[in-house]
Length: 390
Ligand SMILES: *Cc1c(COP(=O)(O)O)cnc(C)c1O
Image 1 (cartoon, rainbow, N blue to C red):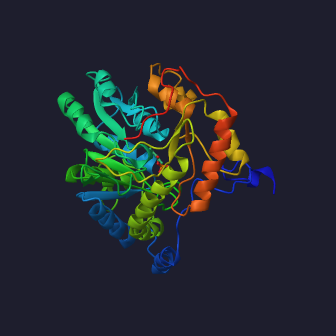
Image 2 (image 1 turned 45 degrees about the vertical axis):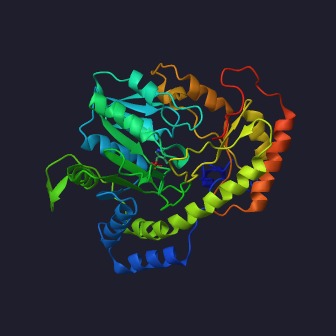
């Protein structure tokens, strides 16, 4: 194989025994794709409509619009809200890059706010400090899938008269104070790339209770077309194909099983991690569910030696996410985000896909035990020391 044939940017050539992601696909998906292929309607068809209806029902929200991927899903929300040049959107820096780049795609300015040191979700107090007369929206990212402090953020957004949005890319099926995510703000985006709990390869859904907003997102998705070959608005081709939608419909049926398995595995994993000095498992808030799209451990020391030790044991591990405000693409943004910077030095996400075994979890715990025995802890640093569980 020559170099050009290596197409997976995630594959660094190591022999990894325990991977971060392991999508669940079965005969149902294969049969559903087969049916679409033989139907002759590969896009703009009934599979997309069925997927959207099932997704809206599962999340108890009025409208769901399927799109090509989450990045354009966010851009579609901003455009549908009329956000553009000169407008500011407050977002965490501690997120996947496209939460912020999608704001730039529509000409807006991402304003980075800091996150809570225990849940890694937006800190509503810091968000309030970053409001200006140009602020148009606040995008709450549900980190690892655990919902952000939506009631506090809504209070900040309502006071300022700006839209509260959800980047629910990682949060399929999660609940906050008894309600599913997806309808907790003006609009939400869910992604279906292969690291998420359910996947269509590429794909996304935008949800909203606002029928007019949903209509505008649909127009943006399909060339601004109001009737055949009549284009009233500047639109795009941001459609999801029926092949992907058919997979999505099957994946949605798997969601509750996947969430239940992860919930049970969390209990096991916590027991195995308990007592490893300087390693804190994810903090769970009692009033919301945690779908564990990520299982991020907070260390009391710099992460990199631990990360290398895990990789050497064949355990895939990574920092989710290198902060956006430290990326060259945002080199022109200067801002202070002390919690984000501290987390970026101390967090490591370890494998926790739905097919992980007790042996895998025990292997990860053993590798962590030897890794932390190796180095000195960062006692005395500002955010040093493990974070207490609640
Ligand atoms: C995956 C993800 C996205 C981007 O979704 P794509 O479908 O890959 O474009 C955006 N935000 C967050 C938080 C994500 O995890």
